[in-house]
Amino acid sequence: MDRVTGIGGIFFKARDPDSLRAWYRKHLGVDVQDWGGAAFRWTDGEGNPVAGTTVWSISDGGGDYFAPSTSSFMVNYRVADLHALVQALREEGCQVLDRMEESEFGKFGWVMDPEGNKIELWEPPAGQ
Image 1: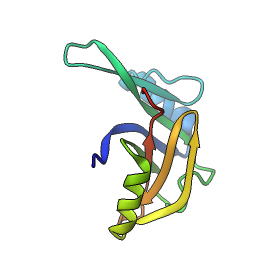
Image 2: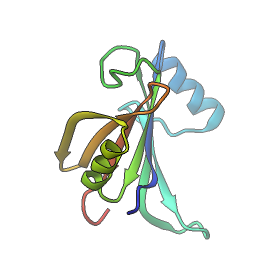
Image 3: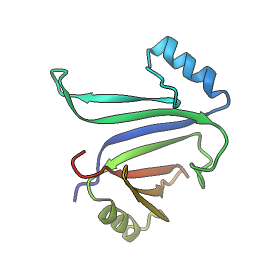
Image 4: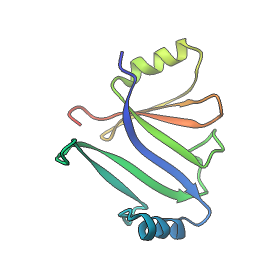
C-alpha cells in the first residue's frame, strides 16, 4: 500500500502573521495571497505544469486546528488511500485522532507523531 505520496501543505502559526507573511514575501519571494498563504504549482523536471499544488499558510496563534498538538506547525501529507492508511496506523499502535472529514476538497484524517506534532493526512478528490 502506498502511504505518503507528497506534501500537500505546510501550515504554521505566528505571533504576528501579517509581519511574517510580509517577510516571506519580501525576502523569499513567496506570492502570499489575501487568504494568508500561497499555492505552489507543481512542475515536472523540465518546468512544465503538472496536476497538484502544495499549500503554504501562516495563521495567527489562536484557534484549535492544530490541537491537541501545541506545536506551531502542521504538515499536510498527500496519501493515496486515507481509510486504509488510518486503519494501518491504528493497527501499528499510532495515536490516530478519531475525527475524519470528507468534503469537495478531499478526505482528511489526523495522527500524532511521537513528539506530539499533529500530522494531517489528505486524500485529494479523484482526478487531482
